[in-house]
Image (cartoon, rainbow, N blue to C red; front, side):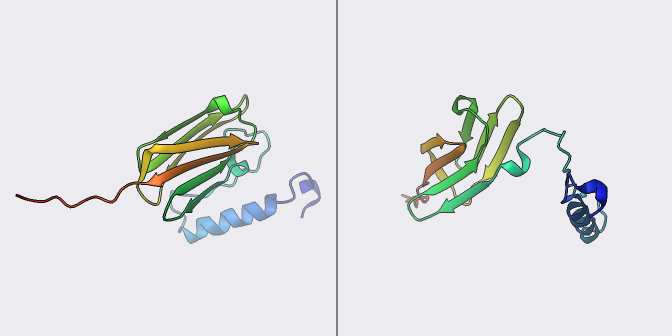
Length: 133
């Protein structure tokens, strides 16, 4: 670590990871960029984490939304994609999550407590056969 990097001790590590990722992608146009600058505040970034838990009976999406008020969260689902839009005074968060299976969006329930959003879906009914007469 260089002497002037004491405020951001992981900058060298992130730059090295960025260099290696770009090298692995053969310096294509899809360059990885880890911006660790504290003055950039365009989204929740690393503060946000989304988990999906799937069982036979339900599909559960859990998202960390620190600093967001409940009334500033909008959820939409088309059965295959969940869209979470949330914001605070300083940040905006928009995430489209492709669900691992089709769900019945009409049975969804959501709770928000202490910065953690939890959305629970029932799986969509399997398509039924069509009898030909």
